[in-house]
Image (cartoon, rainbow, N blue to C red; front, side, top):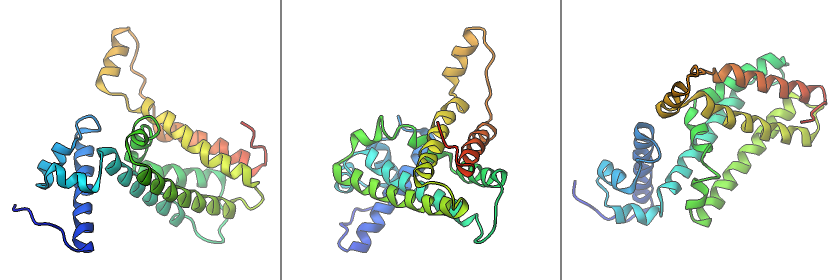
Amino acid sequence: MSFKRARSDVQIQKRIEEIINATSFIYNSVGYEKLSFNSISKYTNFTRPTIYKYFKTKDEILLKILTEDILLWVNTLTNSFKLNKIYSIDEVSDIWVESISQNFRLLKLQSILFTTIEKNVRLESLTEFKKNIRKCEDTLFKLLTQLYPSAKSDDIENFIVSQLTFALGLYPMCNLNQLQIDAIKELGGNFPKHDFKKIYKSCIYKLLYCLENKIYEL
């Protein structure tokens, strides 16, 4: 494919989307370590300098992907509830867990967000990401306020933070790689196959119970 300079905003946006889509495919296939500008270049036929014009690191592209995944999750979650319907804690837990379980890439990227991704991006990229996340948190806050109108604002905010903390802690434990599994077997232990959805629902249920009954103390 011959290279052509992007001249319009539409062409530039199309090029950015192509880079993001290629990065998404490569990341899903080989993971973070093997993702590079070189592999993205081969997949898109864009040169590395061309990619560098739009993103300074692979982490900046992953930040875009994570933003899209979080927006998708929040939209899916909020659209799963009907207005003016009273839900039991068990029903809310099921909906919450099912929505996040549809996009494990979100948890996978989020698990390295603070330790890796955020350390390798420009301030403007990180600021844009934080701005979008704040909007998502506001949407979750409004949803929980509707579901639990008598809950305190601080308790709702604590729930939002806590549910993510539990998810990020559980996800790596429930998705060990082969090296981790082999190490456990070498020590003579049995490989613990944890069920993410089952354990996470238990966590969400307890957090929601505290929220509904105004005993949110962790």
